[in-house]
Length: 261
Image (cartoon, rainbow, N blue to C red):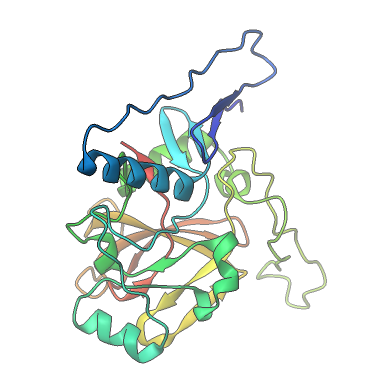
């Protein structure tokens, strides 16, 4: 499989990488920001620069441009703060009151650099907009396009080359033959094992699963028995290279990957 990937650094400079089979290179133009004419324009410019620094790198796969790391912002698109929750009681309360919230896995900020933040569904679905300007939270159809483009064994091609623990085949009862949990990351998607938060049940699956929210509710394309119980669709990648489309509760905390408009 050949993937053309474009990476953009935090300061707006773009670099294109192409497969060896291509003999020609393409030039990428550096974006130029216009000088703001008033105070509001200056504010918007500052917000744009901040969003760029927060977004960091991107990766182009097929016709889609994705962030190559999990979302890590603490304000909505209009600048309003998203409340940080630091206790189990606060997290449950936010879910009951249908209020947006974010946290770090196990409330440990040292997980920030590699995993970003975990958001509840009320932050994802807030009308003020969680995704930065020019980006959106993908629906399931868009996740499926990504996986189809990456091709066979997509999970292995999306996972980082280091960091995932070894796992055991469920039929290996004696657990004598561990299998490599890392991927080859040929896609450039940089998938880590960031776990999630499950409402009142606390944190789970660090080192085992990566779960991202989608913007899809009650999808008839996914065989789930009881949408009334867990109405939101998520994408999960497991340590044993499975890709699962599952349902989740609104008060769960999951990671986010944004897709360019």
